[in-house]
Amino acid sequence: MLKRIQNYLENRILKYVYKYYEERLLEIVKKGKMPEHVGLILDGNRRWAMEIGLSPEKGHEVGFEKAKEVLKWCWELGIKVVTIYVLSTENLKRDRRELEHLFELIRRGLHEILESKDIDKYKVRIRAIGRLNYLDRNLIDLIRKVEERTKQYDDNRLYIAIAYGGRAEIVDATRKIVDAVIKGELKKDDIDETTFSKFLYTQGDRDPDLIIRTSGEERLSGFLLWQSAYSELYFADVYWPEIRKIDLLRAIRTYQKRTRRFGK
Image (cartoon, rainbow, N blue to C red; front, top):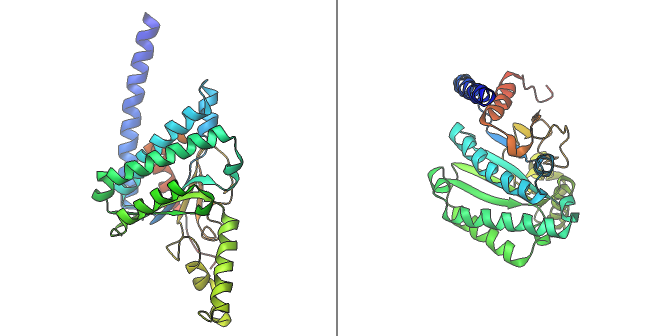
């Protein structure tokens, strides 16, 4: 009995300490320069689930709910562009049962967007990026409905990377440029970095200022390879389902402390 009381008091104290720290950190972050584009690599859903005795599918479900929460934090902070890495081209080689579950979560999320009041509140334009032709027709149609439903907004932008690979994106951009040159729509001498960027899935939108990856892994895994050339990288030592607002604020605070020279 005494042990339970002690644990209860410790948890209550810890909760208040974290709350105070979060509020203090938020005050500090709001005084600094906010990143305009944040990339999120949602890593560690399966490992989090298996380490606590749950199925990998449960990890994806909790990670899905966490993604909605983190996106709202970003919009509340005034981050204008967010790109989330949902499914890579390599992920398509996973077990069929797991993939079907992932696609069901993606469909659920897209249906929720169609009814979401937050999308209207924060005026979020949504686009899916990747080799969407790898997806089934019904899912592609649903993606197009979401894009059409949000196309009038531009205060905030959300890119959802599905069946995405950074190398694939560069290859696809190169093919489009070659086609444009052959058709006489583009001159070879006019091709530079700015022109190339416009042929990427992100179509010349702002490159990410900050990329955050959870789970402790320190690599990009093909995420926005071209766009991340001068991005600040932050690797959080927590699994995606465990990420807290404090972790996001710490990442932004670390970004604010860095001096960005862009190679100069």
